[in-house]
Image (tube, rainbow, N blue to C red):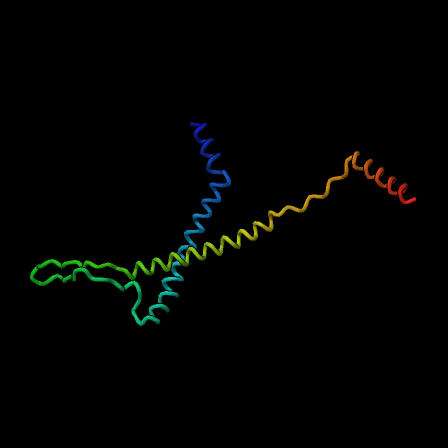
Length: 145
């Protein structure tokens, strides 16, 4: 049992697992922010422009529902295709995807700047290169005389 606990502890404390957990938590909060942006800011403006009461109310009714009667006849549920909710979810998806795309680009720019290594200094010339350079210089002096 001790080996199992040690293995689990090593797994749970790895950097990737902790980073993933933080990402999931931040992603959940980010999803709530974007959903609020779509539901509370963008969709009311769109419904104002289109003159409707909102996309969530758009639907194609296949079978009308009937309310319960006083005689004891049960109510019949309405059968409808709620395409307005589907449109709202598509807009929500595109806003989330665009927001994540922008966030990743910003993070990658910062990461790229941090990871750029300083240019390596030129290596010192070897003994052979130093000797060949001296010979070349001596030959130039001899040719110039």
